[in-house]
Image (cartoon, rainbow, N blue to C red):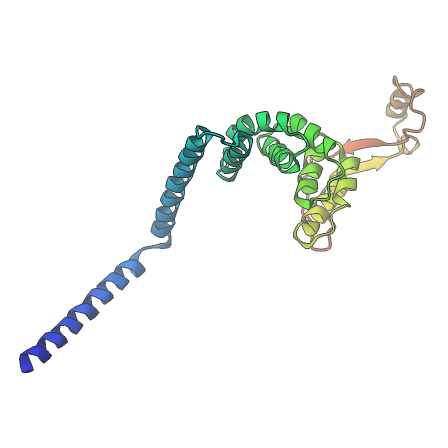
Length: 226
């Protein structure tokens, strides 16, 4: 009886020691080490998902457009925008009415720095009410110096998630871009150049010019800039 009791106590003691050591090892890992472990797992799962999607493409009756969209989405989520574009473009060319495809391709173009291609898709879906789409639409217009258009697009954003971001962009544009009518230009030489430039007679109502500033601005909480 005593031997049995001793064995039970010994087992409990060893179990406690094991749990303590295991827990200590887990706690002893730094956040950096844990982050590296999770990142490695993420990379592993990304490659496994990509492999499975590619195998799915070869299955009989596979919906290749849908699978390629998912592959493009996977590349996008992994930050590989150029590869996402390569996969999504053929899908978009066959399903231009599919907004999910158009949106992902347009934003991929934007993030990859292909603003002209991005703007082409954004313009074709300009009536969309998707606020993430509108936000990147506005940013694309900024990249193309279409500031008036960008402000109008940002003005359509009313939801909590993107409204503040849109307001910050409008404040930034307002601070960075100064608008003045031709008659307000004090330098007579510059005013004369503009008034006599080609196109003045064709567009008599074009009464504004845009002057860009190279200064850096800080956007405050009330959306003013300094």
